[in-house]
Length: 195
Image (cartoon, rainbow, N blue to C red):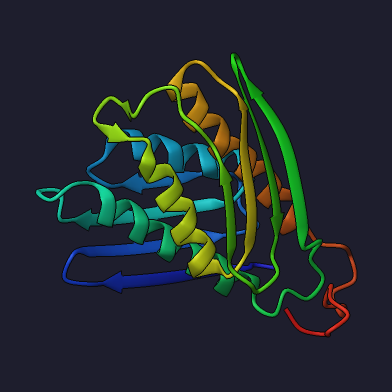
């Protein structure tokens, strides 16, 4: 099917370019100046099966906030463009994912309506130099950019690195299910006839 998109966004705070292909192999080429964030985006690609290329720069002299949030927005927009009118997709996806001490749940609806429920308390406020509050900002940007409904819960986790990573893995697995083809490419999965 070749569902893919390329989106670029430049502001006074960030410059971000994202290429995304839904029928990928989970390959990633991530170029941001934030090492831990790169690792999370690579995790997202690997576990969703989506090929993801991200090149992002931002005003790091302020902090990582603008870069992380704006990257979420652009990834979301690329996802939305790649899905097109969403004809023939499963639409819903969910996943319960463990990672050692950590356990996360993600439930996703490619609804065309942006909503984020983020029921997460991290054990610590940082992983290295990465503020854990930025995890919510990334997903909030992605939800807004992609116009999707996402519920994320951290059900267990004493290691902060694991807690963050398992959320990205759970989202990725839910996304993998939601974008799958039903085999009926004529049908939009909504009684409204549009998503």
